[in-house]
Amino acid sequence: MTTAAVLVGVIFLAGLIEFAVEQAVGQWLSGRIMQVIALVCGLVVALIFKVGLIQSLGISGIDMTTGVAQWADFVLTGFVIGAGSTKAHEFFDKYLSKE
Image (cartoon, rainbow, N blue to C red; front, side, top):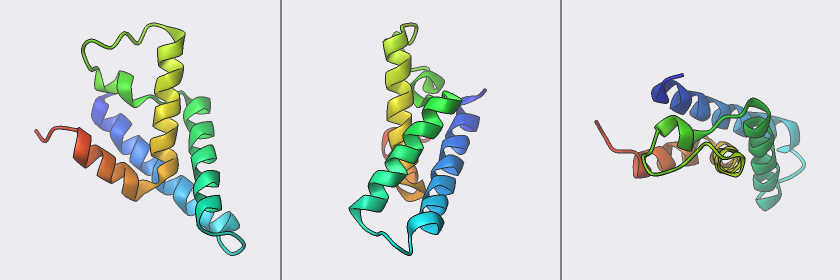
């Protein structure tokens, strides 16, 4: 899968998780509790589907062949997904170079 496809997928998943959490528990909960629920959902999705941003970006100097590195990649990606679509956009705008 191309880097662009992974980035679009992560933004889509972030928006989906954000929407699902708001619809599922938004009328009863708010604030930090909803953020924690969204982060947990993002982690679960990234781990189940093995979505990793670091590996897809192909950054040189990072050895992604070890199991620990791959799982760390999934966890970090889960945090980006769980933060929501707005935060995912901010993350990509800040850390990815414009081509």
